[in-house]
Amino acid sequence: MTPLAGSGSGGTRLLRFLTVGATNAAVSLGVFLGLVAWGGMPGGAAAAQVVAWSVGVAWSWSWNRRWTFAARGGRGTLRAFAALQAGLAGATAAALGLLVDGLGAPPAPAWLMVAVLATATNFVLSDRWVFRRDARA
Image (cartoon, rainbow, N blue to C red; front, side, top):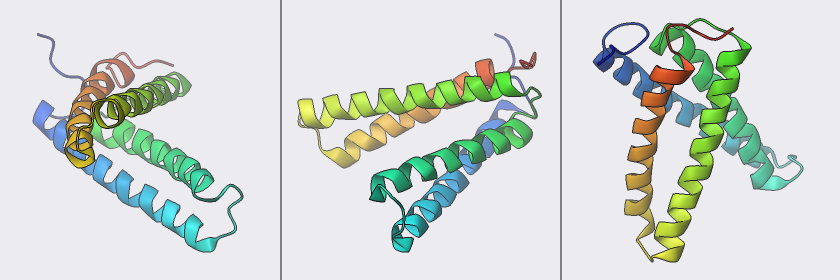
C-alpha cells in the first residue's frame, strides 16, 4: 500500500485533520451566530449559513493544505477541495434525509453515524486526491 501523502505520519495527519475540523466548526459557528445576532443579513439564517460554510471551507482548505498535508498547489487544489466538500455536503444531506425522514431513524445517532463516515471519507480523499504529493497546479 502506498504511504499516505503529506507531512508526518498518518496518525499525525489524522490528528491535525481533526484539529482543523474542530477549529473550523468553531469559526463557522462564530460567523453564523455573529451574522444572525447582527440581524442585517439579507436572507436571514439561511444566508448566514452560506457565508459561514464558505468561511469554513476557506479555513479548512488553508490549514489542511499548509499544516495537515504540507501540500503545494494552487487553484487546482482549491477546486478539488471545493468539489470534495460540495460532494460530501450533498451525500450527507441525502443520507440524513433517507435515514431520518425516510426510515425514521433518531436524528442524533443518524447524524453521528453519517458524520463519522463523512469525516473518514473526507480524510482519505483529501490525503489521496486533493493534497496528494504531486499537487495540482
